Image 1: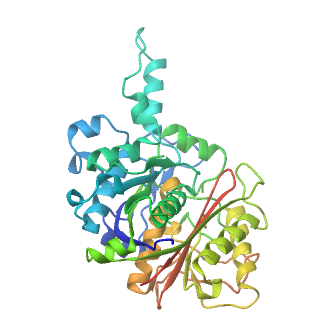
Image 2 (image 1 turned 60 degrees about the vertical axis):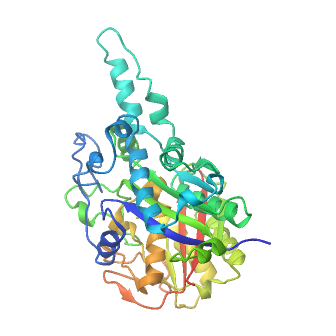
Length: 414
């Protein structure tokens, strides 16, 4: 018999806020944080701005040894997971350490470390060398490993990589392992530190990002007729998933239940989504079927909606295929217009938004959208500019990634 799985802890580190309450308030209020890149000189790139962590100081959270031995993406993971674990309130010393695991996601891993080390090697003073920490700092699985080491969790431990669907994959895997009885608690989520010359420059060169350099705050505009690409962001989102019976027994607070999760592939193109959203349709259908629900039961959908011309259109076609020609009561808001796109961490951050929407019965807005693309169905109930108060008992979150990866997770209020 499959076990039920609930969320008992959450943590976040992002340009929109470095704790759950600040993050949620800024998201609901549509606070803009995109600005010109300050971490390196981006003046020669087509895109020159991003959603950066402001005044980030790892020393405020981590000791010197940990900082020295970890890349930014792992530091972000440790900080967000520390929050989520504390929020969950579980008494780890009283547990079997093999009952607690970590499944974490990162689409790129330690890009900052990799670039810096290669640069030092190429520009070395006649004696080029690599740091012995290059590999352990760079490899993407080090985030899950370090969370485990930091806390003594000896259960399931690995990292998922599926581009921008990465942390939805991690959440789905954690959900499945717990309901199969392979763990009682799993810390899951995703982290990304992509604002580096090579990573940022690569996305800029392929024209995936907006180039509204004169107005970064209004650049991410999902569903808008004049959208021109996403706005890159960095940070991490963390969730503690737990066996329902275990959570109830210890009197844990419960943010919601994971009731369905699915992944599909477009099998279509390296970077573009399927134009008719075929993979997205099935990912949503499979997740809802697993939950025993239909699209009409969903009160809130947080879509992938990155503000790219092709991606937004294919996703809305997929949603319309499920909802049919009639406008239903499901609210939709594209919160990447506020947070920016955290790539492999996006799914975890947006899962937090979906769960907070259920807790607060509030739908955060899509900002910057001034003129809905006429190719997008008018039957979609998109929340624009101002948050909406409405009951939310079921929320769904989509994430899609390069390579054709589609991931959908469904949450239900208890």
